[in-house]
Length: 542
Image (spheres, rainbow, N blue to C red):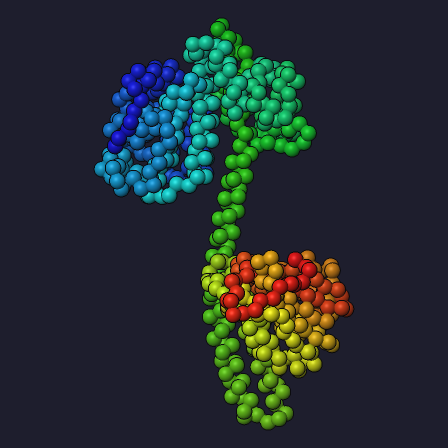
């Protein structure tokens, strides 16, 4: 594995910088362990390391997921992190078992399947080692994975800078004060009475409070009241010497309103004579991490519910379709054998079974649309031809209700899925006929601004403005219960909108109660062959 390392004199300086941190061969610390735990949780890996690389080995200041004999570190022969430390650049392996690393001991003995490491630098910019995420199996690392690891590496660097500042391992106190003031974590110090005695500029970014106004004020002033008791108890335990350090999560009140979720890590400060002077440490804003975790959990829960829903509907479709098929089949046989008096009862059975079958089909179609299992193939289709075909199929229903049905407009070609478009037209025209008692239904097609459009306009009952916002919701109906005036399951328009969305189109509606409604669907237009004379113009609504 070619490293392309820095020149020897730079490597020597890097090693001196590493030794100056005093972090080699020291016990695990929770301030670093919390970061590797966060890597595992947020990036979704079984192994995460804070690896410090010297000239003979890599030492793990923190590790999650490794077992003996690798928990403390490894020789350089087993190290992938040395590439990050010696080059100072991110190193990514989507499949460590392929290419030049296939025989690497980290792969063959430790079981690395995929590796992503970013540099950990000291305040002078020397790469001390790597914060890395490791998967047992190959995986394609994403831009989000890389960005998350870089952000968490910034926090590791803040802890390294704090270590140097608090332990006096700096060549110049003024230089490292500049470092502390530039890190993104809030570096804090409080006196023995619990008043702020030092705050770096990051304090203003996180809390919105000015540093000058906060110094000398009680720490609890910015703590959410519900967290006062726990924070005060932890601080008393620290000052009493009962614990060497304190780490807890709490909420800070921002100036002007709002809260930020933070993680506080502080340790006891003593004078040279041993007297307690207060506490010092860092405050890390974890609001975004908490939100990210909550969103991830919610997303996984939603995906699981969709899987359960699809499985349930799949089973129910089988359990319902089988008896429905039997009911319809035997009803048709029965219709031929009964007399006139019983024929009406048989017709009711048939219509009820067909209505239930239609509802079942609609529920299953909606579930497939939500689950992404519907397949679409966009191709040029004759919009007017499709509208004319649907009108022909629904003509008997229109005639039965005494409603005129017309299709107007020039030849128009749209990019759409033919089956999905047929379903959209069938739902819109069928609804228009169903809700029109007098007058007629007109299906008009056209094209403008590169968008093909179809408009289904009726002279029916119109839509109540109070119901309009829920028009495309699942199972939504303007009339319900005993007040219902028209049959339906409330799924037709929900399915229509999803089909239009998936075809890259839009759907809008204009309606006036007692006057009628007009639904307009816009789709990408397809090129019109030269032998077809195209038309332009369309409805003013969008």
